[in-house]
Image (cartoon, rainbow, N blue to C red; front, side):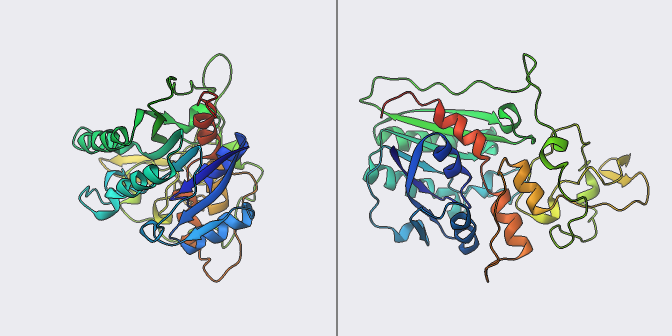
Length: 311
C-alpha cells in the first residue's frame, strides 16, 4: 500500500478519497480541533497532528503528498483579499514538498483562483512547485460530473516529479453524459428526516440571503455547500423562491422553510454515514464549517485514480 502525507486535512474528505483509491494516510494535519475530532471519529487509525503547519518541522517520506490549503481571499463566498497571510500557505505546502519529496502531489482549492485578477497568484504557486522539481498541471472540475449531488467547482493542481517520464491527465466526467445521469438531491438526502431539529441553522433569512435564488428542486443538483451556515442552500422541502425585483426574492407561500442540515450537507458532499462526535468542541457552526470546507471524497478519489502507476 502506498503511503500518503496529508496537510490542511480538515475532516478528511481528501483522505477518504485516497484511501478508497488504495493509499494509506500516515500523517494528517489541521489546526481546527473539531476537524480532528470528526476525522478520527471516521478514520481512527491515522496519525493526526493538531496544530499550525508551521509547527511541524519534519514530515515523513511518502510517495504522495496531498493538501487543501485555505485561500479564502479567492473564494466566491469569502472576503476577497488575496493579500491575507492565509492565502500564502501554499509556501508551507512547498516546504513540505521539499522535505517529503514525493513522486506526486495533489492540491485542491477554490476555483475563484482562476479569475482574471487572481490568476497571477495561481501562476506563482505553479512556479514555486515547478521549482521544487515537478511538472505541474491544473484544471477546474465540477463535483456533479463525478457522482456528487452538488454543483461544486474546484481547482486541482497535480504535480509529478520531473524525473518521472509520465504525463498526468485529469479524469473525464463520469456523470451527465452517455445516459449516466447526474446524482440528484433526492438521491443524496431524500431518505433523511425532513425536519431534523437541532441539526440545521434555524434563523431568519437575511435580505442578503434572499438576494438570489437559494433553492433547487428534489431532482436537481444542490448549489454549492458552504462553510457558513447562514448561507447554506435551502432544502427542497422549502417553498419555492420567486423573483420580485433585482436582487429581491421571496417565498412563494408562507410554508416553513429551512437550510440544509449539516448531515445533509455531508451527504451532498459525498460523505457516507459521516460521524460527528459529541466532543466539547462540537457546535452547530463547527459541524457546518468542517463539512463546507471539505473536498468531496469521490472527486478527490477520481483525481488520485488518474495518476499513472508510478509507485
